[in-house]
Image 1: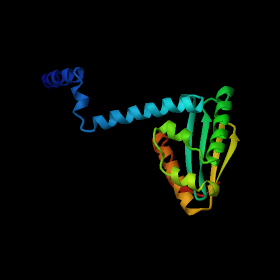
Image 2: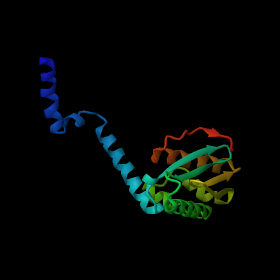
Image 3: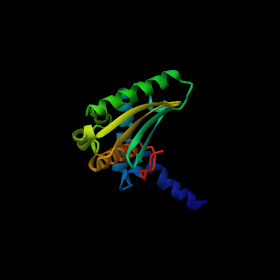
Image 4: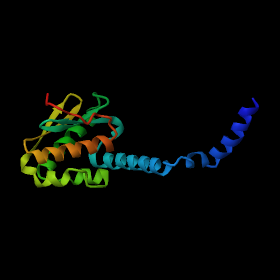
Amino acid sequence: MKALSVILAVIVPAVAHGQATMSCPMHEQHEGSSHHAADVDTRGDKAMGFSHEKSAHHFELLTNGGIIEVGANDKTDTATLDEIRGHLSHVAQMFTEGDFQLPMFIHDTVPPGVPVMKSKRTAITYTFESTSTGGRVRITTSDPDALNAVHQFLTFQIDDHRTSDPNTVKPPA
């Protein structure tokens, strides 16, 4: 019991003064990362027109491109379903035109792959598809440089949106 009292006497004041978290050598990076994630969520909600809390993003890397998919957490929430479908339809159109301002705004940076995706825009097809829970943008290309850029872009999306989707390449379904 005496050992527990000594430990508490040291730890409690340190926590109260913020010293416990500051002793972590990676504290600033953790804190910066969580601020970045919150900023991505805030800008994403504004740009997409629906709450990230009411939806789930998923990204797939395919041998011929990839998929951006967003689904409503509640498939009876027709307002969110409509907003998701409108957003993804708009994304497909913008990307087809070589316009990547939306992901640049959401992530506050030029995502990897975007410069090549812009320059190779005629070699990449972006197709919106409605799903029962929202929608998806199917990205296809037969150009090796464009394919690499699409995979870089989607891998970045997986990381920055914290989806935990695998970043392995699989054949299209």
